[in-house]
Amino acid sequence: MSERSNLIHRLLESVDSRTSYIKAKLGVLVPSQIRSLRLQSEMPRQADLAETAGLHQSRISMFETPGAANMTLETLARLAAAFKVGLVVKFVPFSDMLAWESGFSQDSFTVVKIDKDQDFLNPPLRPTAEMQNQVAQHDFPQMVLVRSAGLAGLNDSAFLALGKISVDEKKGAGVAA
Figure (cartoon, rainbow, N blue to C red):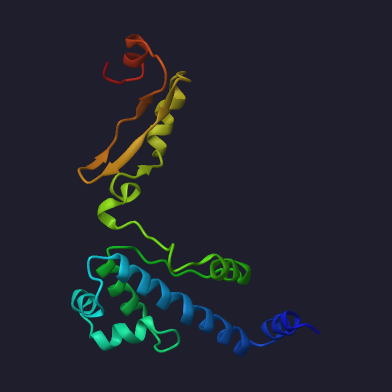
């Protein structure tokens, strides 16, 4: 039996093997991300990150060393907040973990910071049921529902014109000309 076959067999049969495998992957990939984000940030020294995150420099050093520390969700959230990025923890198939590991590079790992994240600052939102009903009552194929939320708050403009639409069509749809 090949080494890969043995590993797959152990992972299929044993909770302890799966636990060890997951911890080993996270124990390398998470510290690598922390180090990469720190080096790309305005706080390239561990002490700077520690101060911003409200942690000790020695803890930052441990967090950046593969397998050296178990991090809590609280700690990961503090680090994400210090880096001005989000954090996603989700359950995935083992194939996704393998793809993440295979595709990860500390040198090319980047995350858009909150102040530059246009998808967060001005996200397009799904139209409400009321807005969809308004469109259904009108026969304007040139129109689509648009609802967006930005820093200024919710914008409930029901329609965005695509292409050339006459003033009469806009008035009929309840859109200011």
